[in-house]
Image 1 (cartoon, one colour):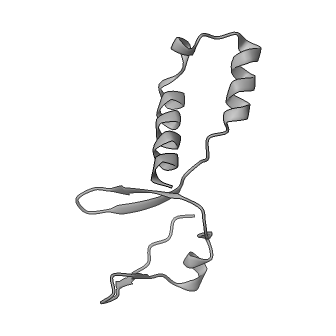
Image 2 (cartoon, rainbow, N blue to C red):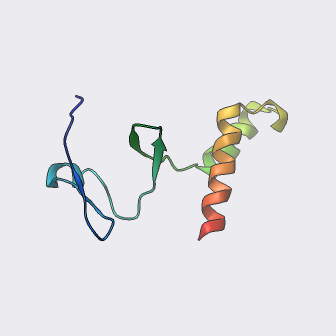
Length: 85
């Protein structure tokens, strides 16, 4: 269900979200923020599961050169996240 609300930016630079929206966010989870000239979108970031990836790679016998663009992008994002910590 799509919902449109109006929120305010405080003088401290914080967004005031209604409680029902704020409850959908979780402490410690990462979110992807996509911006365009007239919109800002928050999306929960998926965590890359290295163990699952390695298991799938071993079972399929695939070469690393056959990775999909999505897999490569997720690996790059995970490395960047770890570098920020």
